Image (cartoon, rainbow, N blue to C red):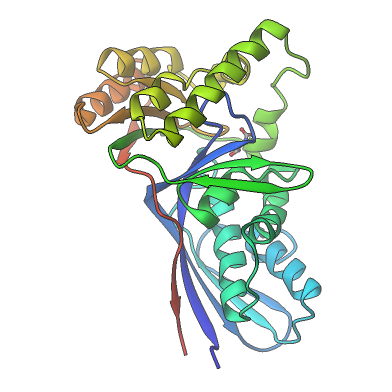
Length: 308
Ligand code: HSE
């Protein structure tokens, strides 16, 4: 009988511009490491990172509680978390731990959950950080690749990204507010004009077509958002310059990664990703901010290892 599993769940980028709360993509850059062990009673979170250890305030803890209740799991579960994805930077940090937990419990108890059930449970964890449940990051982290999340009822469509797609994710060294996602959701307009809606739908459709046709240029050129990005960009010092620099250096498209403040540029293997990264760094530097840029490809999803 399996007593423990280890799950490495990837970071992710949400929205991809026009697909607010709908699109997500797993990134092969940083992974959270979560070890789930049947042990003792109740749920115990173990971590030396700066995260809540109270299960009802921890993203993975919330997921484990919901799954324990739903599947009437009598065992206690120890959740050992090593965070490698920086929290609050738009790289799906909270989602990765939540997704790892859902994937791990699914494996530990051989629950054979569908993608939608897995994502549904993982989404419960997002409540701890965003205030509401959104599934874009957790779906990407739990399933890998590019995902489209349809809600009510929850349905997840996964498409394997083209092999030549390359992403440059610039993470600025900024102080981010606590509950950053909640704060950055507060600045988004409640109503949008028909013409803006048309622009975003046309670009979102371009992204889906680009993934379906495995066309990285079409994906990148469709990463254009006239609704959420303009409302949020003031929260990212130097955003316009970072974007302009990356486009001038050859990126197809540039937008905020998730709720920010990281900025993501889309390109392919034909282009010089180092040049794009340096251009993004210079953009942040002009706004007196240092940044780290991760050049990566999409991730295939979590890596699961059974223990004893
Ligand atoms: N879709 C969410 C948002 C992602 O933009 O608020 C948060 O990571």
